[in-house]
Amino acid sequence: MMNKSDNGGMEPGTADADLRTSARVSLLELFLLFSRLGLSSFGGNTSAWIHRELVEQRALIGETEFIAALGLCRIMPGATVVNLAVVIGRQLRGPAGATFAVLGLLLGPSLLVLTFALVYRRFAGEAIFHTVLEGTAASSVGLMIAMGLSIGAHLVGFGRNRSRGAAAAPAALAIILTTFVLIGLARFPMVPTMLCLMPISVGLAYFWPASRRDEGSDASG
Amino acid sequence: MPADEKTLAALALVFAPLSLVSIGGGPSIIAEMQHQAVIVHQWTTQREFADLFAIARAAPGPGTLLATLIGFSAAGWLGALVVSLAFFVPSSLLVYGAAAMFYRWRGSAWHTAVAAGLAPIAVGLVLAGAFAIIDIEEGSLLPWGLAIAVAACRLWRPGIHPFVLIGTGAVIFTLVTLLE
Image 1 (cartoon, chains in turn brown, orange):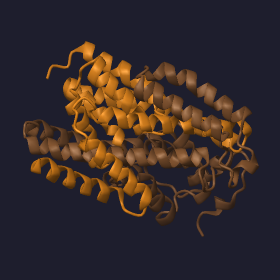
Image 2 (image 1 turned 90 degrees about the horizontal axis):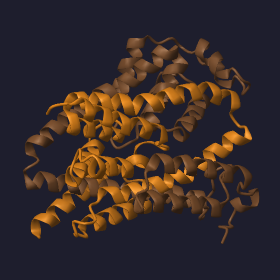
Image 3 (image 1 turned 60 degrees about the vertical axis):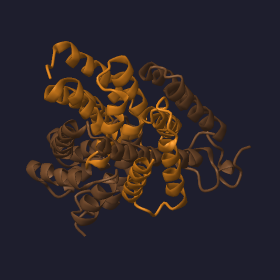
């Protein structure tokens, strides 16, 4: 209804067109909006909250625009939600918007988590306190492993649909294993290792993409 | 805790570069954070690192706030501030600049290749991070058993909310430890 620019085509400048037509939102509003999103998101589903609030309820940003922004925020370094705050804040209010959105997203949770840390310091001596945290950490590690395995299986092409434009399965598997062994087991320093691995992996994806036929049942054995 | 300039500089020098290689967000740099904080600079012990990881995961907001907590452990409030800036500003500036380019080049071959090439690296880093949190030298198999059980539940029943899994896991872990 309100967001005319939603079907605005894919030509360059769509983003700027959106910038002009989208409903104006004050910097304070943006700050408070992202504060609320940051504080109400538990367990790493903040992107979904942002989508619900900004796209579905307030229609501040179009659906296609949001999906594109999310794709960008996932591949860039930095926490996906922080990146999303930067990109959406920029879309709505330029540099100031990006700053206020990020401050909103991080300030409340930072203060809260530091309060937790102070409580932790006081009770760190209590064995039971440490045990509960150890159980929480181990369970969270389980979630990380599940996430790594499910995305990894997706990239390597076990079963279901592979992501569009993924690298060839052997290349993806080789990169996953190399990264895991170098950083996780051999404990190479991360920054130089990344500077070597990233161009290799991107090059492999560019020159050796998964062929369309691979994307069906063939798991490339 | 005294926040001497050397510690603050070291914190900035560790976290600013990490900011720029944290592909896929927080989990990807946990292995390196643990290495720097526990082994290289001894800002935290292994036990404290794992506890802070749990706190960052249990609190609202991005799990990357673990970085802020390490800064706080190393050098108090000033340390937390320095790490927050060093860690969140560089990647934010990068994505800000990339956003403009991104909308212009969406769908091009190299754009697709960058996305496809970074994905497997992020996966390898996430799996590496799992090894950095659970203390292998401690000798107990319980944390690994729990982690694998939670991972299996998550893959088997994706519909269960992650927080239910974490909560249940923590309760079971505490009970088992108390009974031992």
